[in-house]
Image (cartoon, rainbow, N blue to C red; front, side, top):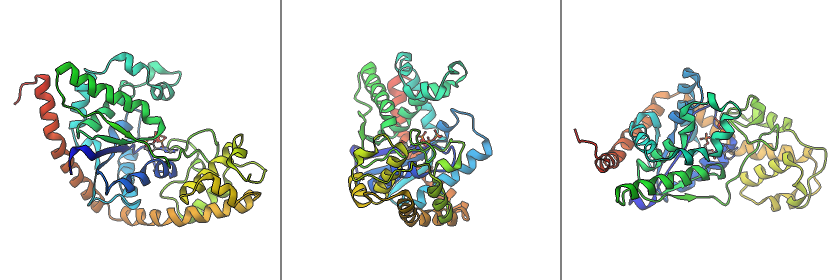
Length: 335
Ligand code: AQP
């Protein structure tokens, strides 16, 4: 397999992985891993751009790896590893910090959203987060990155960095990264607020379905999900002003590999007392076996650590020549 079909993608170990991470990212990764040479990374260095409890970060990293394996990431086909176990990411990020322009970073909407009103108090790590993301991808000369809508701007920046590096040094060293956008990728919203995205850092555990939740918990969370009193319409147009109902229909559609149109047709006129149990059954049939497998892997942390260790070793081998060539181009004296 050549560098022309290599993908890199990551997930932050900032808490339990959830249904949004699964439908928006992980299940797409699973389907890509046979087709592309794949690197999947627990990006703990990105996680610390906002304060993390050290013990929780370690636990979430191991748990996140178990969830990826349980969801179908196959270590025989893909590299699964922890970002901080390959120093190439940090080294390349520094070189890219000296390529990226402050003006480019000032345009990043995620920084503005995450820093909020307290911008002066945000870490410089959060500010240069997209530069590290460019290094994550380009340390392996990955050519394709599966991304959700929210990451498109960061990917553009990574392309700008690659192009700017190549033109500053007059080389054709870094590839121009292409996004892999999924037609079926779903933006899963909070079960408590249909206008906010389902997120690991939401204070309410009832806002999300964790990939570690057992069948009873999944059923309870769907039963308690916020909805409105109206029955479901026969067409998704009727959901335009009903964000919570729209979200549940979208989740059902994504889990059953159907379109919202098909779900509205099937449940036309149904109330939530009919729809929610059907959704719970569907979600449990897909997610509960994953949670069981995660629990089995949790009981064998050495196995998971071994997979991560091997993954990091291979990742270091893969990035080493890229980093060495990059340093030579920049003019760093070889040791
Ligand atoms: N709600 C979501 N719907 C669809 N896709 C989602 N992703 C995350 N939430 C949803 C996708 O999952 C991948 C990994 O995300 P991440 O963990 O790196 O970062 P995030 O998007 O910041 O996720 P969270 O849960 O919101 O984390 P916190 O709370 O720590 O900020 C990405 O491809 C993302 O698009």
